Image 1 (cartoon, one colour):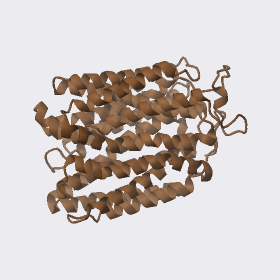
Image 2 (cartoon, rainbow, N blue to C red):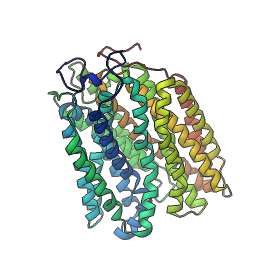
Image 3 (cartoon, one colour):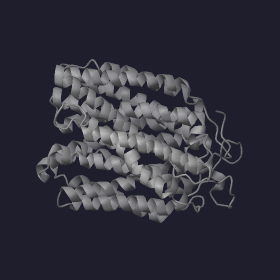
Image 4 (cartoon, rainbow, N blue to C red):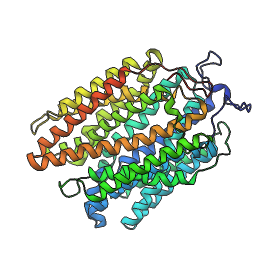
Length: 494
């Protein structure tokens, strides 16, 4: 699905909608464009909700499937690994296949995986089903981002990206609540049974209404690059997730985790050099020239820091509420729900603010809120009132909402159309790696300190580390500037 609308004028019917900041063309979007984006938004919400729906269910699955904790953890680790490996290839997929074909592939994989999971007779088939689901999920978000960049005039991008933040932030926050409710009344299979009709409906609506955007290109797939993505992104994510897994003991990282991480880093360097070489022939799997645009680089770094903080909080807060405060899984999910809803409901509003005032006031405010709330989390003890924890989580969620929409939009705006799909893929890949890194780092610190000084001390150390990391977001936020769209492939000022 090439989106190089400006450089190859094919007379495509949607070309006028790709207003790139120049005064040409109306700001109003066509009904067809709105239908396409809404369909993709609903599909993205469903696939991302599914990503976190398993977290609360792992205890139940250990009993029902007769597996131990390190084994059942693979249902989450395997999902993340598949995402980390598939996402770097989405730039190529989006440029080669039509919009409809990419959507049908993504939702077909996801729906098939969901059906298989619902019928799974044992752990091995359930793990395979999760991997198939992850393949569809990985393609969905870059498809949504690339489509928005192609169809939405630059004056409206903030508002539309605000709606995207609902899918990206509310869905993971709702996952534990939804699965908590389901597990209270049904077996674990119903987590998939309830998701399947929604996924199939999105698939049917997309098949009926989606039209192709831009033209597909003949691009060659570099198999060496694809092979390198497995140890590169897979090794890093696996190594980090195992270091922070805290499986059954606080003895620190195992040899397998360190080896995986080392192999991952070496393969990552090889992958980067390979892409730089292929860029000279204009045939990279993941085009790193997006980093030539300063605001893209700053935005990606800001997103990475925010994701480390977000994932750390998503893992540590339930631990605190269940281990120290003794809340049940459903009560924990409900305690975290107001923050997720606040984040999502404010997304469209923040998008409109962004279109008016630019990124700087929003990102600076958001990063300061993030630092303060994480610092307050580091002071929680066994007697802290639950209402105060919920309040702090809402403040953290609002801070992250003020960061995500401006970071996505500011980062992707200056890219020329031929880099849209690659920019989206880079952002999505680094989000996965940052999420794994945040979880690994903070859970490791928690486990090590808790082993020596108790659970409360472990929480204090982990949240204080997250607050210190979040200070980097304040510095990066201060560097954010409003970006105009790029109508041609020439890099912006460095």
